[in-house]
Image (cartoon, rainbow, N blue to C red; front, top):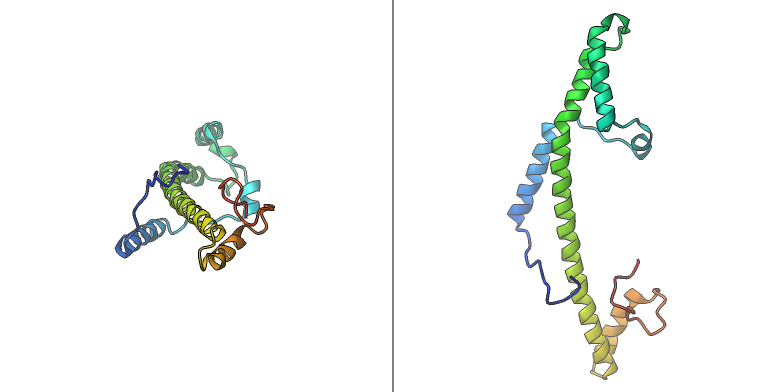
Length: 167
């Protein structure tokens, strides 16, 4: 995909599409008003459920129903059942959101890549024009080569292999 001739995207969003997408996300957020955000430490430290853990939780819930007499007053099967239900309800929605995010991120990545590939090709043309002595091209080249000034290239600003710089 690092080829000017392989332009896979040639689209932009209309203002109406952007508004429609923003409204759809706003509606999704409003549909789950109790959704929360965890901080990094919470995400790292809370116990997490997985398939095996979910089966364990369901087994415990079933056992709690049969042995309610040993439960303290602050622990209810109803609360556990609501948490299990919500977890299971959110699972397909999280999958859908992840797929949507991946498509958006990939589309953005490809659009950026195509723009960067075109810019690098133009940069090389400007460099060649400056080296050939075309009037005014030294100024353009010197401005553009600043992007690669700290890339460790001793040759004057051309990226060595056309790959994106690390900064």
